[in-house]
Length: 388
Image 1 (cartoon, helix red, strand yellow):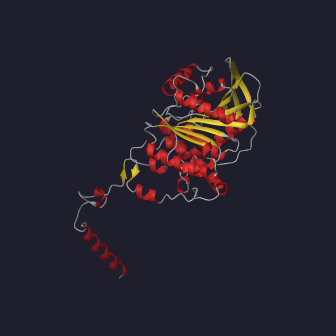
Image 2: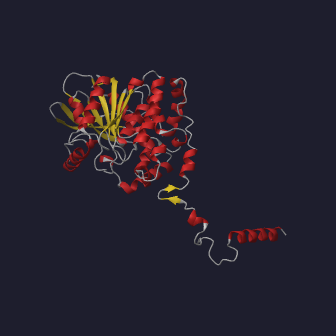
Image 3: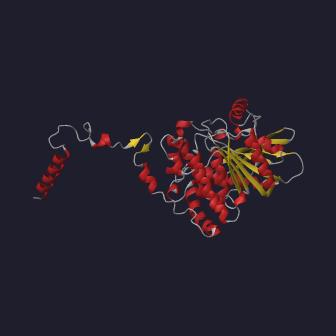
């Protein structure tokens, strides 16, 4: 009896939707059907992305009151989502080779960056008496993987990479090598490769998604590995005998800027940070047509679960009241100006709550997604004021 009743109900339902007398497969919608008028996706975005955005209320964002108490409460939750482990292995640095470049000595130095990985960094040590201020240089993505640390500093050990970094310098840095410019100013400079670049290059652009999913299945994440390594790299800079551990800074461009403000929030040794061309809100970036929607490179900046509780500027605000300098190009197609301004305003609210708004500098420059000579001069002059 129950089966007959259920069958009758199904028959009535099919008749009411127009399928009862149709010979067409239910999986093949007719012209004008629900599935034609209500597409499931729009390119790489679900059509209901606006509804999902409405649920992103960021419960761990700063909501007024004592900012130090907010940070003490929120930082452990952010670290749990962003850092896959707490590494304790000794760095055990080893000089591989070196070259005298007049104003500074350039070295390749191998060290244990995490419990699992030993990497080679380029370390520049200026001439003269130390200890010196130290700066960690964090490279961009750029969809170019043969060079990582070499994007900042000319390699002397690989002719092919020297050709690549010269091209990169001319395209983004006004023909300069920013790491070397800082060394000439009297900074110890350290540059490393993120997983997938330079000495650690993998299978290229299309393989990023596989690498990211495999790390998730190994209980980690691509963004988490990068954040963990950058924190450790900042601690490595502070550990060098030539460096004053109270004067450690970070400089990053593009994805490196994301890494820079992220490590400023997570690492206690970082005192001053320059971030060129990476700051906005999820709302402003998750829109049709934005580069973020391509998905591949975004894995390096996507911590599983973090978007449910914090926006990008909320994470950066965990660095307050440290000295941070954000710069952005007014013509940068990757970061819409209105979204950047919204993010800047959110951060200024936190620094202002510390009575330290002068420690947060946010600026727009003419031009696009670049770190040209004028921006480098502004950034390095500002660093001098913070760390010298």
